[in-house]
Image (cartoon, rainbow, N blue to C red; front, side, top):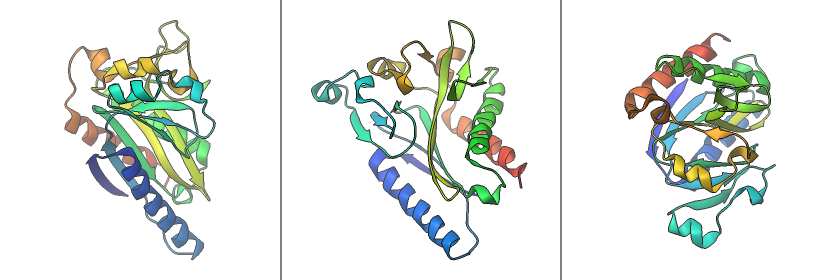
Amino acid sequence: MKYDDWGLIEYKQAWEKQEKLFTETLNRKAEGLQTENHLIFCEHPHVYTLGRSGDENNMLLDYIQLQAKNASFVHTNRGGDITYHGPGQVVGYPIFDLENFNMGLKQYIYNIEEAIIHCLQQYNIVGEHFEKATGVWLDTGKPACRKICAIGVRSSRFVTMHGFALNVNTSLEYFSYINPCGFTDKGVTSMQQELGSTVDFELLKSNLKTCIIEQFQKSI
């Protein structure tokens, strides 16, 4: 598995770079060649992205208000509804050929969630799967149910792109301007919020990378 950290990068630029790797992987697959699996981490400046099945009404700010918050708005081709990306959030883009791991899309999403849950355990945060939605959640089944990691994926011929966004030291204020993932009755949280202190971002990325690689190596 190839790992790359793109650092702080504009959403559209990262999307273009993803599409290039995605297309290269599909082309290699079509030619019967061995494909590589790419795990990419990055951060984005303030941006709201709306998935294919999303509702623009879940964006609660107009264009002028977005500009005032130094945020942009992008229609994207992943699944899911609206979400926010910003500094202090680890955005992961696994461009995986799932046939290399002998799994389908449902198992892939479960594995991403499971890897993040294992990583959070190292920080004494109890993450959970949520049967009603993708992502990693805390206190499911309780009034205080809240999301700590969003997932939105695109796939073609078992090759994935887009991925997940884990709130580490993220400013939660920006989530108040949307109905996150279309939910109006669920909260959003971050590792910093749960722990009451700032998380070492580089160490967290290292731990998370290890958890994802270990989780997917189990399937090989």
